[in-house]
Image (tube, rainbow, N blue to C red; front, side, top):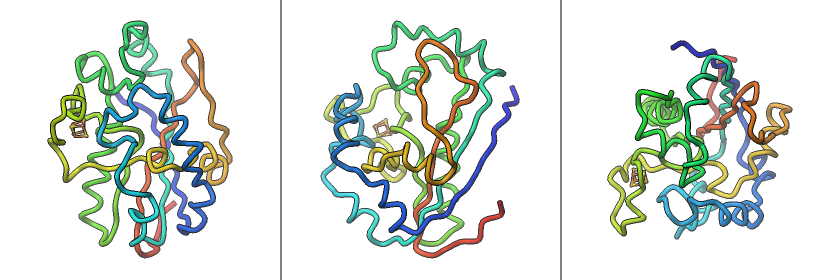
Amino acid sequence: MKLSVKVRLKQLKKVTLFEAYKNEEVLGYCQKCNNYGKNFSCPDFVFDTTSYLEPYNYSTIIMTEIDTQPIKAQIDKLEIANLSSRVFNNYIKEKPDEVVDIKDQMADKLIEIENDIDNTVGLPPGSCTKCVTCLKQQGKTCISKEALRYSLEALGFMVSDIYKQCFDLELGWSKGELPAAFYSCSWWIIQHMIRLNN
Ligand code: SF4
């Protein structure tokens, strides 16, 4: 199936990115999520965001917009009432023929790009969904430590502020209805400014 995906980029100085850093408030939201403390890519972390981002000076925010109409039929097949987690992508690992998994493709692509740009880290949206159930829940170590990355929200940034600041978009939530589009925010954090072709 071909999906219409619109991508927009915005490059920010780290100091500007930190205007959206609201760690205590965002952590409060994370603590209400079923994934809190159950996934290596989600809080609570043993490191702090400022130290993690210390080597970098710029951030490139990647806004992906996916038109939902071509995937409406597949979304309708999800048994949402039976979900034990709000994290769809872990659930859909058990349904590989029924749904489209764009998020993992984006995460893999960002890590590929790290190899092309020196001193950069690609950070995908949301929690890691490589396993159906994160091994943290079994007290084991991550099977993919070298590819473990963190989303903006996991590191304490208010993503709705970044949507507004960078793309003039209001972040909304739909209840029981498919929205016209899905939005997803990924990012690179880098040492030096790079040229964007947008
Ligand atoms: S790769 Fe698996 S074990 Fe590691 S963070 Fe992702 S879901 Fe958890």
